[in-house]
Length: 327
Image (cartoon, rainbow, N blue to C red; front, side):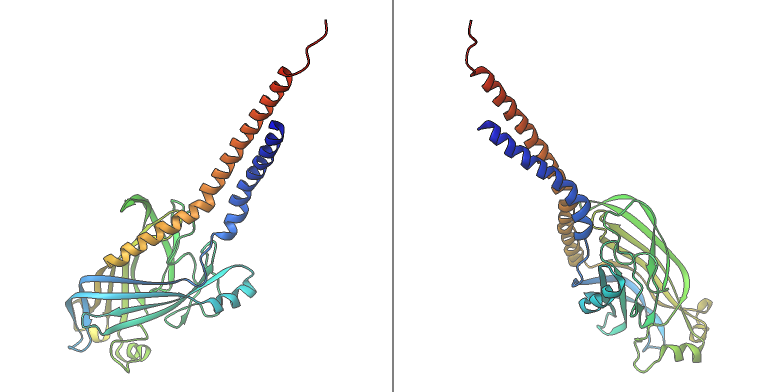
């Protein structure tokens, strides 16, 4: 009976031992991916910001708060179309950044289509990749770091300038009890396109720039606290500055007219929601990548030891219970 049990345990031990590396190195790379149908909304705020008042003589003024609503929606149909030619799992995110002034009126809206590999988060170049209607070809990451983010610099795409530059790994941090990696990117003053959605109806940005000789300039310091397991930021802050130069700004001090200046942060309730979501997803990724393979390997090793112990006891029992030798 003991030998039968030991053989069964040995078979189960071998099965678990084989399943552990299969789960880690075969199943995990295929199952750990961004779902194509993801939907997320985020509200950010810039308190005590400076905002250009287009209706009162084009003068910047101090406002209590500027609200930025970002919506992200996975486009499943577009993902399937691109996957057919790309030959890999692809995610298409259609995003909209909606900037709202203190009076509740729209300041600007910037749509964006971001196409990337569901597993690695590397950009996938396909028709429809754009920012504010302008075709782009991204290099590096945007919105999300790869699973198991490394403590190093990455190339990060800035939607305003439509360019990529290094985002620097600064070091480990603890954010509300979670161990994270902290990254910073500074984009120097760069001439950028005026948003196609302007605060005043009927103004065409291209015509406005050509007829007035006014250009828009932008600079930002972007800060991200990233969960290294999921690659998702648990917090993001930006020091953004925008100003008009030349043309209608020629009469302003230094020929510059502040369009927006403020420190943008997540609204408290959305910050808590994001942290809870990342913690939940972190456990799922760790279960697939680490906990389950280690548990299976440990269980297989334990059963293997138990099988050997039962086999040894069985052999001792046979020796002790044998017939006595004749004189």
